[in-house]
Amino acid sequence: MRIPYKRSDEYLKIVTPAVMAVILFVVAAFGLFLPTYRERLLNDKKEMIRELTQTAWNILAGLERKERSGEMTRDQAQYAAIEQIRVLRYGDGNKDYFWINDMRPHMVMHPYRTDLEGQDISDFSDPNDVHLFVEFVKTVKSGNEGFVSYMWQWKDNPDNIVPKLSFVKGFTPWGWIIGTGIYLEDVRQETELLTRRLIFISVGILALVSFLSGVLVLQSLRSASLRKKAEQELLEYQNHLEELIEKRTADLQQANDRLSEEIVERQQAGEVILQQRDMLSTVVESLPYPFYVINTADCKIVLANSSAATDGFSPDTTCHSLSHGSEKKCAERSDHFCPMESVIRTRKPTIKEHGHVNGEGKTTYVEVHGYPIFDKAGEVTQMIEYIIDITDRKMAEEEQKRLIAQLQAALEDIKTLQGIVPICAFCKQIRDDSGYWNQLEKYVSEHSHAEFSHAICPKCMAERYPDVDDDG
Image (cartoon, rainbow, N blue to C red):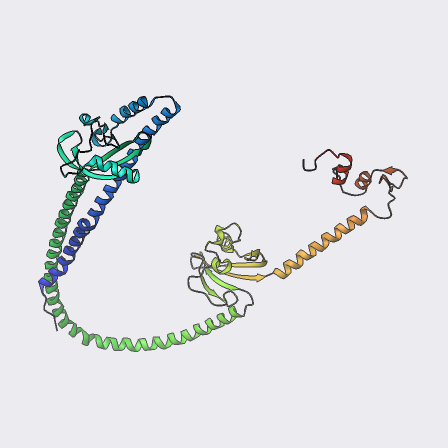
């Protein structure tokens, strides 16, 4: 039974996800990103005026040090400080500034309100009745520095009063307060600029989504028309197919008979293959040493006996991870011989003695055998590798070499010095076979391969050179 096709359902499936995506974007942009951006922008500006105020404060500190050192009088130092701070500017158009007032409070310096300099400003307030200079003094007294919000003229325009946030810091030696501020209007303008950009982006996205939705709707209508046409053609084909089925049935019966015969033949061939595979598995398992077949392309093991992998191995196991527990190929390491690299390069079998050192420092010697397997094109695609433990043999060879070296050294000693050697009990000179007395080192050098170097033992040093320090 066919389900009636509804175009409205198709439209909703196309339009709804697009509209939801636009709504989510607008909510995220205006509800989350925009407030976060404003807060971060305000924090950045607060940190900026804090650092700028500290820089200006350092100017006062430098001049105060000159006062204490006697290079300048206090009046000279304060006058220099006022003039240096007065010309400091920053920000857009270099119109942002610093001011100085004292703790009374009286205005010491203001670059745009020179009319206030020297005046009592304790009663000075903004349109919201905030006595800002009194607030500055309170802030400095409570924590020596801090932020204060109030209303103030826009830079050098006394007719434009806007919100402002200032940072003030006290300079205790002179009883001054130095500060600067940011106009919250700047933050508002930057936030509005970002808001307008987000609105433009949202409108653009909405327009793009609307266009794409329209294109998808048109494609859906075209697809519906093509589907209806295809259904009609399918019905005609179904009628034609019924005619072909009867004709094909007889052909299929004959093919089925032939297929039954082929199945019997393949079953017989499969049994032979299984017998050969079982025999190969038995032969491989009977080997007393690790044996496996490796793909040369990716170093993965395709066949291994239980001597090579006691607990079995996964399809992704590589020869270097099984043999050495390493993720790197042996050819990429200087401390491992790689039989695969040799087999691929020479296209001939290779045999190599190799030493393995485990985590406990114990060395195991093995004899690695590698044999190439060629494909029909004559390329080396796989390699047979098996490993024979020759540790006992190598240890026996090393022991044999050590014993031979010991025997040779013993024979050399026997040939060099033998018999009774007369030596003076007082001066330690030795009498040779001709009856002459020689120094001990001369006699030993002539009758052996030993050589001497001269030094003074601690006892003789103390007896003959008592004034010399042994540690020196």
